[in-house]
Length: 346
Ligand code: SAH
Ligand code: SF4
Image 1: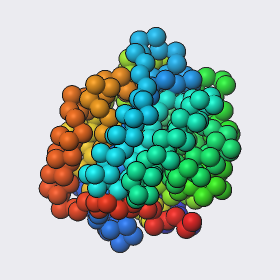
Image 2 (image 1 turned 90 degrees about the vertical axis):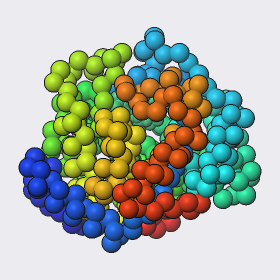
Image 3 (image 1 turned 45 degrees about the vertical axis):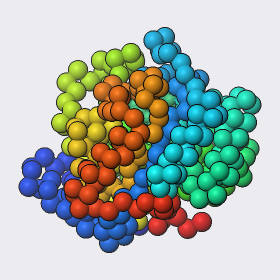
Image 4 (image 1 turned 30 degrees about the horizontal axis):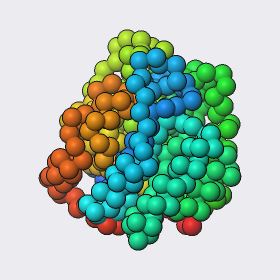
């Protein structure tokens, strides 16, 4: 049972008064402290490829964007990045990419997962974020050594989902993928974009209820950020970065209070809106950070949204910068640990 009623969640998401906001974040932080502690866990993100067969109306690397310069890491590059994270004691990595489901891609991922596991003495945790796949594919990747999977539902509301995607992108299929992942034994993460065109606070409350109903272990949510080369670019003419950041922080806080023991990521999109957006996310109840470990030369090509931060920094610079940022808010980094969601029961 959620610790908050619908009405309470709605009321909290609607707060605008600064003192009330501070109180909301304080309350969420206390719940975080009690249920997951104040250690922050890192998942280094390997952005594997921007080749995507889907055409989500909000995303900069959608197949219908002719301006995308395509890149795909080689196996060696991907393995090297992941092992760099291992050497830095990041504990785990997320391998993320545009969606492909051809046999060559499925084999390629399986091979990378096996290699990274073997070369890290089975110590580095591996999360995949590679979109919708068949049960057989998910099973092969699980058997190869991946143990967590991130698949955002984007919105738990079918009608809203339908406005943001072409007709052949199927909400039910996506939900079934989440259920299959759980059935196979993955720790399963999902999430939504916050502040989407046509989205209401009621939708966001429904999203939290969805996370709870689907017994989700990890939440990865971030503010929606328009990308100029997408069909939705002009859907929010009054887009306000500050308001979007605030709504995203409120959503993190309400999720923490309602769901208590899940892992919640403070995503890069928060930092895209404000330099210390991710630290604000940690203080509003998140406990996971996903540093970008992609080689600098490819960063510019993996722009899901505009204004992605740290485009010209390398992974080493990111590490030093993050450590300072996290210790400055009084939190500790859980180096060399998987940092599993306490919600996951196996
Ligand atoms: N292709 C995979 C993984 C890469 S996309 C998938 O879609 O699951 C990762 C996430 O980026 C998506 O789930 C989406 O929520 C987010 N994203 C895409 N475009 C965005 C935008 N304009 N603003 C904020 N987040 C966006
Ligand atoms: Fe592809 Fe994911 Fe972007 Fe959709 S959100 S277009 S599936 S990369």
